[in-house]
Length: 151
Image (tube, rainbow, N blue to C red; front, side, top):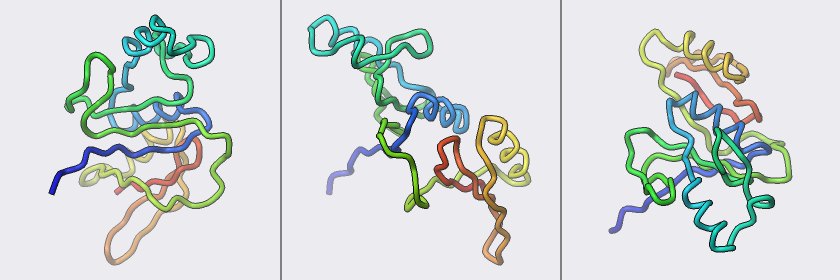
């Protein structure tokens, strides 16, 4: 059986703000697709004004941006990671219901409260604190309301 390459795709109103939040939350890097974009603009396949924005001092896709683990491999020509990635894509509708899939962030022994405070400083909100016989965690929401847990 072949192992599949994958990424988690998250719908967003503002993909660049979401990518910035999650890059800081996870210690990931925002992917740099500027070389690929410049090549596609030069070939006439992409419109700089319609398809791109400036982000972090470089050309980026207007409607999607990914973050990747800093230790994972990536394609230098495109900036696209080949490992752990989150891709944020612009959608017209806002989030309206609870996630069916979420991330669990593991802060380490005795570090949950400090991590929750750090994430709040980045723009997250605490939804509830859970203490059950099987464990304890904090349910949070990112700046666009996507739920995740901190253990």
